Length: 536
Image (cartoon, helix red, strand yellow):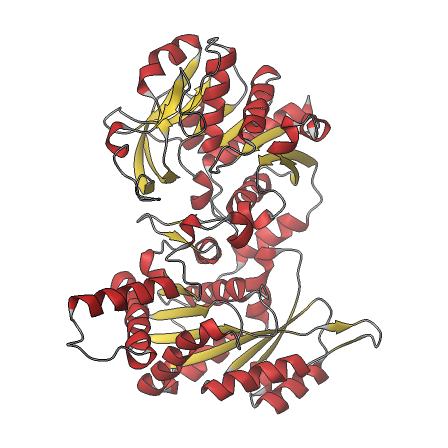
């Protein structure tokens, strides 16, 4: 069949839920038998979010092929249960870098390089690459930011051109807007949506559907008004009130008839009836009263919860599977260094220390690992969380005073975490990173092997420093177990503390592969151990 394209744009304000909407629509279409893929077009000039501050951009979501991408790709993968690749996240920086490289090589034969057609052609080429690399029959394309942002214009122009070239029967435009609530008059206002749609139409894109988001119920009269003033069918105005249950969004969009309307306009027929029983059970389980379980997340970017969005969701998935109500206690690792936040940490039944870069707050993470080890608190360390666990063990069990990672202290006499030899000559930021999917062989009889129930697994990495093999024998002799290794045995992928209920650290990021219906085994292991501790 001819590839169909759905374009998702946003209006009024950012963070209105385009990513979740696109992910949910993708799931609806997958449930009807179509192969789908999702692509995010990000207007920033950075090549990717890999070197951006988490405070600015939230987490960096890593794909199988090592691409460092926008956090919305995490929504896409978790909802639709697909494995995306690097062409599924395009930035202005990537587009301009490629066009400039072609110009320098002489590919344009001395022609004048312009936004139209050269930049827009490169954008269209990258959108077309999604089908070629994934085999998707329907590609959902989300444009970051809001209509009216100057940096989004080349992307929107490329979509306008695609719509003209492919025909409206092969493209469908969804505009997600926000209805602000005016407390003085106790009403939702549609005027910002009208202005946003007018701006979009001035660019040459008329929306086929408007998803109207609000924190309050949206009356039919407002939908009628939006349909009239924005020139869309009443059926195509989808009221979407905020729900506290993220994974209820696909069910709400299904009830609104979104997928059937889209397929009708694209000239497609569903290949099978969707089965929502698993998602309905999931939502029911979220609503069901359950015993509470406190898990402390000790990080350095905890002010912005989106910096740990995949960790948060992975914890939720595992908690649901274990029948407990998750309460995340956000603990700033720098506060622990100042003697603050310990009362919160001590009230937790389990501790998670996620990844991060740079020395700020690292000593607080080491202290959290020490506390978990000494007090037998279930602990899961992710990437840097594993490394601080090793540093604590070297310092306080082996007695290697001032043991550290060479990332934080280049003069440490005991660099238990260090760069591999082949990395040391690389100077480009990001060039020394181990990124993407790598195999891990599990050691029988360990906590990790028990959790996975497998001999070998593949997990996604994003890190620069490794456990220093010069200290492996001493650490093992002291009671540390290396339960996951690279196939050649040269790299430690998972470390555990012997004689502990559950103290496991992974060099990789298991949170990236957790799914609502398939919680990640290492997170399930943590929640199970924490649940047993809380019951005592």
